[in-house]
Image (cartoon, rainbow, N blue to C red; front, side):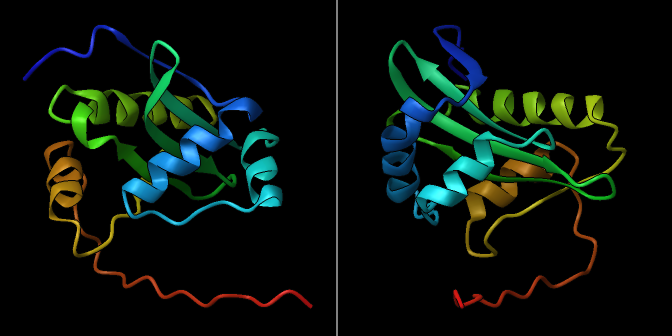
Length: 141
């Protein structure tokens, strides 16, 4: 595996929004509205971590802890930067953040059809718990 030595993991900033949204779209992940983006950046209980190669955003992960459950999601790496250990670095940094926030267990969200993502988290010790996650969009009132 090629080293990710030129890639640095850092916290997201508001100016990163366009590049992050482009990364998520390229990886088939949902987009964040302007208010959602603000919530991701403005919370003490979550961190949006980015892998940056110079000025280029090449990866992301979101870590969130509500005091009871911790989650990692939107782990994404640009296709041309994969297989360099960037996703491993993002996961490890997210886990460190969550541990520092007081979490003792962490859940990861991976689409069941994302075999590469499932292999990634499985290689890092994540195991199925048997729960099925259901989702319902909430309409603005």
